Each structure stands twice: as C-alpha cells, then as structure tokens.
Image (cartoon, rainbow, N blue to C red; front, top):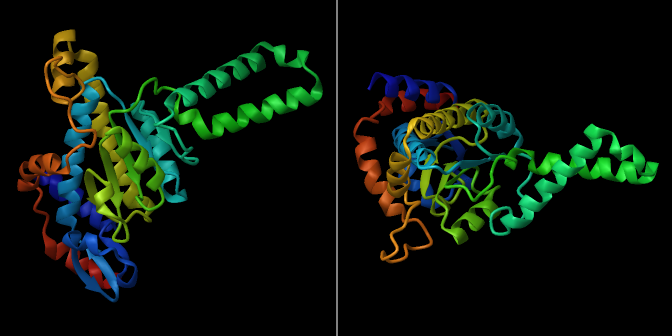
Length: 290
C-alpha cells in the first residue's frame, strides 16, 4: 500500500493528472476524468494507478511466458524515456516512426534488418571500399536510414506478446495492426484519446516527459521482472507460464478470438484496483495549478 501511495504521489507531482482542454476531450474518456478545473480535464489518479498495476502484472506474465513486449513512443517527449528504459530491460522499441506493416508484414522487416547486418559487416571489414565512391555513399545512406528506423527492433525475432503505446492518437496505425493480429495493447492515453483502441488503458498526461518517464519505467521494470522469471524457469515452468499468458494452445481447444477481450483484463483489474485507492483529494489539491 505504501508503495502505491508513493507512486501515486510521484505521478501527481509529475503532472500525470493534467489532461487536455475540455474543448478537445473525447467523451469516451469520461470514466477516467475526475473533474474539470480552469477548462482543463483532471484525470482520476486512482484510474491511472489501477491501469498501471494491471498493465504491470500482464507484462510480467507475458514476458515470463517467453514473449517480448514492444514499446512504441515516436513523439519527442517519449523518445528518450522509451530508449533508455527499454535498453535497460532488453525489450524492442520504436521511437523514430512507425513503418506501415511493422507487425502485419513482419517478414519484410526482418529482411531489412538482415540487410542492415550485411551493410554493417561491409563497413566493419572494409569491403565497402571495394565499391565506387558513389555506391559507397549510397550504401552508407541506406545503412543510416535502416538503422534510424529499425534499430530498436533488432532483438525482436518474432511478433511481440503485447504492444505498449504512448499516445493512441499519434500511434493509431500501430494499434490497428496490433488489433488485426490480436496482439494486446497497453496505452498511456490522454483525455483526447480513444480508449476503445486499448486493451489496458493507463489514463494520464501523454505530453509530459516526467509522467511518460514514470509510466515507461514502471512497465519496463515489470518486463525485467518477467525476464528474470524466464531465465530462472525450467522448460516445464516456461510451458505453464506460456499457457497462462495465452501463448500455448491445446490441439483440441477452440481457436481463441483474434482480438483480446478487454473485459478479461478489466475482470483481472478488479483485484488490482482493491489496493490502488490513491486519495482523490491529492489530485483535486493539485488541480488549481493547471
């Protein structure tokens, strides 16, 4: 309980409760809004903690089951936090821009990454100097472009078990691809976003660098915890964890729905919300400074 209170205090101080102006809000975000002060929507920090705890538990279970979680944050405020924390827990990420087909045409993405390895090998061995100056320049530009767009996905050899997204409005293409493939999505979503695009919404300010950093830090910590469980687990335990995360399917079992059911996550979230009752007065007290 004390950890949750300290996390709630840290989030409030980081400005996670400050949403968009009331004129820009999405009515679907009404369940996550506590009040409106000075024309600014104030997000209920209790809902933020509830979504964050649920997302952390789901990520830890997914990573422990043998799948990675891909983090997507291409907006300027999110790039630094995503790169820093994902590198620390060895999770794939996208911070430059989302290339169409990154998930739905994943084979082509892997081919481009193999091309990047070939170009880097040419540069390391010096064989690139065997080409003409013009071709050498073209190959160097190609290597730089592929590295800029895809270097965060180099360790992702298969489709991820979940997608973590900062700002649903900006990353709508990534969310639609995940939806088409039935990949669960976890979203830091502001009051102008659409919560229907997220399986596990984490309502909060997605324009504040501090609030983004805290949310990504907590989610990456859960991924690191799951990776530690994966490293220490026996093959039998790995199989059980994968089955619990939905990665293993019985041959006689009916095929699951392609889209993950948000009701399932929300049912799990009831237990998470039991200890997530951060004082609403704390959020209301911070509101006049908006």
